[in-house]
Image (cartoon, protein in one colour):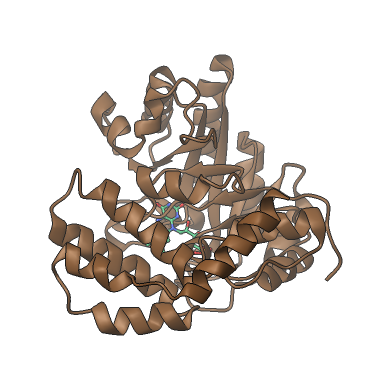
Length: 340
Ligand SMILES: Cc1cc2nc3c(=O)[nH]c(=O)nc-3n(C[C@H](O)[C@H](O)[C@H](O)COP(=O)(O)O)c2cc1C
């Protein structure tokens, strides 16, 4: 792998997972360039302010950013161009600095109601939606962006849909390199992102199955994209963006993320979530996160097995520690290395 000078990294929107606290924790080291909210579903009427604020509490900060200043883009999902435009304008009035449109959600309920990936069956509809939101937001000085999959059932319309999003006025396009039918099954078809990128003038951002630094480089090489978006990989390894940025700057590989660092993120998450949610729910959210980690880390796998039946929060948190002394030393060495 040759060292590269730059390349932006976004945090993928993930409904039920990437909430305000997760965005804040995962962006805290400054390695992410932007984050995106879970989707706000638009059916027809203009939504009340509280719906936007629930999905995106960062609207209350002057710059709509996480606490360390990483921009937060607000995502809308729907199919009615006028309703989406009206809600985008409302979101801007509440403080949104960039609006993203979801054309990728595979959920049956969403697709049945004609939203998310179902629009990929008709590029004209992709165009109309993006155009309406673009025309509404341009006078207000903010951009609309779009996130797509490679298609609904197959990839026949992948290029046409991407071109439609660009013609509609999208400032960038994130491509999750799978069709809706392919769900989340590997592989992600990064070379297809390359075909799209070759056709468009706007930045195209590669997304799907980037779990490691090696995946990052392979996705960049096969897609030709400079920028990527990381989803589950950031949950599995909260140092993934940092690892990539460190390598970009220095050409060096950071060591494996120590268990202590992973446990710290989980504990910080629990600490903040328990202020708003019942403890049982916090435990199930922690299990969901640890479940993402366990596929990529042996210690996480051991802790998951030991803790999977726990329902009491304190017992669960106690089970994340003690941390081995070696682990603490490894983390301190990395911290010193990063500062130096
Ligand atoms: C639980 C879950 C929820 C998701 N929610 C959204 C969403 O709200 N909006 C969206 O555009 N994509 C959503 N996605 C798709 C991700 O943004 C991303 O495109 C996908 O997970 C592939 O990237 P990854 O392999 O890096 O995770 C979701 C994915 C998962 C697994």
